[in-house]
Every structure is written in C-alpha cells, then in structure tokens.
Image (cartoon, rainbow, N blue to C red; front, side, top):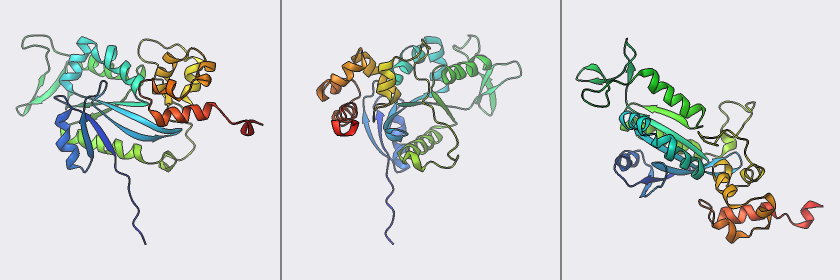
Length: 261
C-alpha cells in the first residue's frame, strides 16, 4: 500500500530582529521557511478555508513588546488594521509567563521569585486588569485570535500547529462535528463597526478573496457592477491579489450564458 503524502507548510518569516529569531526553532520542527520583509505581521502562510485558499498572518510579541504597544497604540492603530486588510485570518501570539499579584499588579518570574513589571526602573507597575482587558479588547473588538506561549520554543510549536491545521483541507476538520454554523469573523477593525458594503460582501464570497482581501477590493471598486466589468489586469492591481486569484474572481463573476439559463 502506497504511503499517503502529507502536505508541508511553507512559512514566510519577517527578516527583522525579533521575528527572525524564530527561524532556527521553526526549522528544527521541520518547517520550510523563507526570510522576507513583511509589511504586516511577523509570519504568514497559505491555508485552506471554507471557501477556498486563504492567507493567514501571525503577529508575534513578547510580554514587554505587547506592553509597549499598549502605550504607543501601534498594534491597534497600525499593525492590526494592516493585518485585517492583508490576511483572511490573523493571530496574535503573546510569549512570556505572567501572573497577577495579590494587589493586582502584573508580575513576571525573576531570580527564583516574582517581580512586578514596570515601564521604567522607578515607574509605576502595570495592572493585571489593564493587561488582560487589552487582550480581551483585541480579541472581541479587533477580531484577532490570541495564543499565549511560555517560551520561544513553545511559540515555534504553536506556529507549527497552526500552519499544519490550516494546510489541511477545510472539510477534513471534523473533530468538533458538523453542527457548528460557520460565520466569518468580524474583520472590520477596531475603529468602525458599520455593516460592510455590498461590494465587500460580494467580494468576500469569491474564491481566494475572503474577508481580509475584500477590504482591498472595496477600495478598488465603487459598485458590484464595476467588479463585474473589470478584467483580470484590473484585479491584479489590488494588493494581495495575484494572477491566479484574479482569474478566479473574473471567472466567478462572468458566468457563461449556458450556465445561467
């Protein structure tokens, strides 16, 4: 009996400091990676979604990185909106061990004990409630899926698990049964909760587009009629859409006469 071939994930990893530190740990787990410059997120990989191919992005932060973003607002103000536009699905991995002290401060292990994290040597400590509330807001209002890890080795294991889950055909994910009704996540972002336009709703149904890329489609076309009239070259000018996805979109929107009668 012939052996069943297993698909291997291919991961693009940002080549800047911090992100690229994951490279040896990912390679140790047998993952194929390419160091490149990613505008949003620290790594990305292709997957199989409920409507076809999808692109998955992962933002990677240590506890201190995350706390810095709470102060600068860079994550919700720039990085997360960019990930919403770029990716169909997106995750935030937060690396580090923390706990809440008896007086509500955020503590980390140090020298065999626990010490409060501070934004400077003599500055005030961070509140556990502030830290946990920030993560909850990112998850519930920003639509980002959050994973927590204890070390860089655990982070690599988490990425490995996610990439292998997503490369598996969508219909093969049966461990939770088939009774759960699938709905796409709210990817509108932190600043607005307005209902998506008709252009975006239609674009999200096209193969390979999804909710993430539908935002870029919405920026390109004013009406659904504009979408239908556009040719493949028009679609290829949209960020994140290459020739294959562009052709699928045009083919889906332009049904042959025999198929509509």
